[in-house]
Amino acid sequence: MTGIPYRIAIPPRPTGGDYAAVPAADLTRAEVLRADEVRLGDTILADFPGFHLPGGDGLVLAEHFTDPYWATPQPTSPGCTCLPCQAADWTAADGPLIKLAEGFPWDGCDVQPASALLLVVRYRCSCGCNTTLADDWSAYDWTSPASVQHLLETGRPLRPGEVLHADLPTLTH
Ligand SMILES: [Zn+2]
Ligand SMILES: [Zn+2]
Image 1 (cartoon, rainbow, N blue to C red):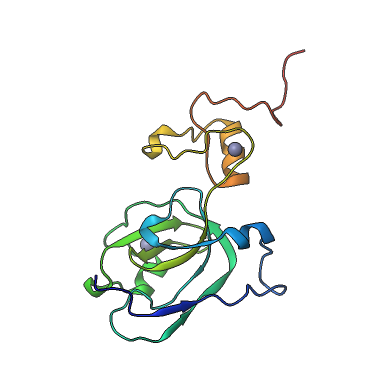
Image 2: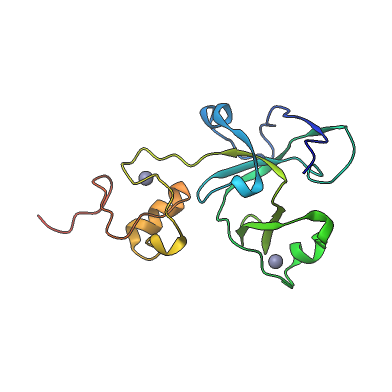
């Protein structure tokens, strides 16, 4: 790469209408990251359309998503025929690609060039869980009700055997 060809700016997030509310604290700590720096459970708020493309010295404005979404970074599926993949029509000029989510918020893949910029709120949880990133997906518990509930609420599952003291139904007396 030969430096950053564009300048960026982040307009305030629109409120009301279709725009889901984002806590002010999250907006404050949002960071601009490359797509390949996004990790499991991070929340993606906005993108900077065209930033990864070569040339130009214009100003690229953040485009806020109506629905921020949790990232589940994974390899792309070459030859995928889902609607977003077909519409995007990625080529070699886009560079390496990464799939940041699948099935939500769009039907199909959310693929981004690795060097695309995104406005991201890093995963953070204060429930007492292990907030460090596991080495790979198999190191998470994807099946137990407690872990799935945590995934739905925070965007990241728990580790196998991880027990939380809060909000779990008690079956014994
Ligand atoms: Zn796809
Ligand atoms: Zn937690």
